[in-house]
Length: 304
Image 1 (cartoon, rainbow, N blue to C red):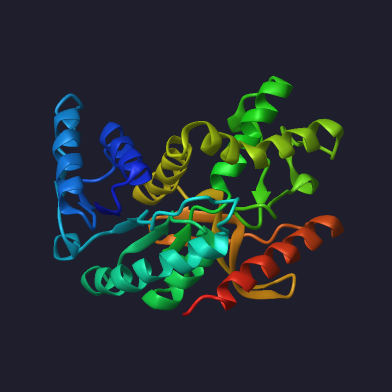
Image 2: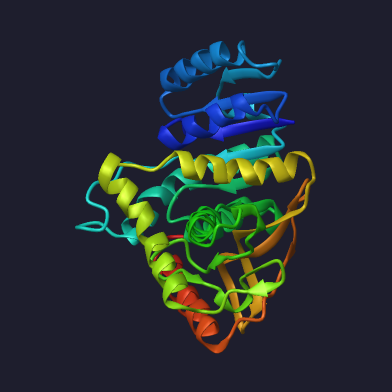
């Protein structure tokens, strides 16, 4: 398998390092606007790889070098200061859209069978934009969406309940952003449901604020989203067909269509092979519709 990472900032580099520790690919290509940055990462990671039981080829390259990629991980992002203060997620979308228009068509041209994993924020709007720009089938464009949020939520539930997080089936759905919501109506472990409670609401509120707290403390997030991306890559590489909440095109679910949001989806070697349609309660349905309206508003203001 050949994997290309576009963007070797903190997130792209963290994903590349995770791939060096768990070498899913035979070849890893790093592409960055500043070639020296990619060259430095490739050299450093090659040294790290020498201490692993791996013969994965790691190199920096340009678009031509990415030809024949099985997966393209897109993390490139325009710098933005003051997010949440003077800048909004719409500003991020407007700033990052030119990067997609520049990179995506050329990369799809040389890797027409690739799966694209969109990591760049605002991930839901940009996953939708990638679908429009690339012309790829819907199952081959996957946004990381609320996967990392769901993992955070399960981690908090695990600590509170004394149950291993992998045994907890609980999802954060909708937008990877302020309108996301916990789908309490079908959260469970061992067949026992978690009904909404003060505890679950408190932990959800903590989940929503966690990304902002990490950003406040260190100025960025990288490790959580890197390993969330690895979860998707692992399921693709080994055709595991795990179910995970990722951002996908919504096609007539709750009368919502033509927008990308997170629902539980089956991910395997062909990409998303099935999008599940959970039976949400009335409050959750209203939350999902609200997510759709917020993301749709951002999409409508982008120059697609």
